Image (cartoon, rainbow, N blue to C red; front, top):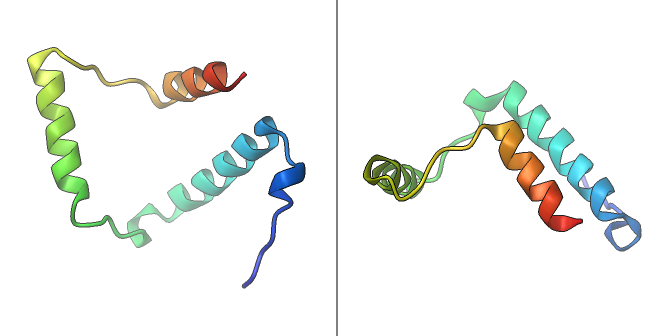
Length: 72
């Protein structure tokens, strides 16, 4: 399937909504999406930073809000 989106004509809001729709679709079949081998290393490093207190986890809704606020 070859899908072309008019990215140069889309607003940032349109692009973020498109990304969100794609993400939600991928989440419906998450078990079919393989994780790359380096993914576990990144997750462990992030967990270490949280345990050390130098970082914290964000709720996905809060993370999306932060992204939206930063692209306005």
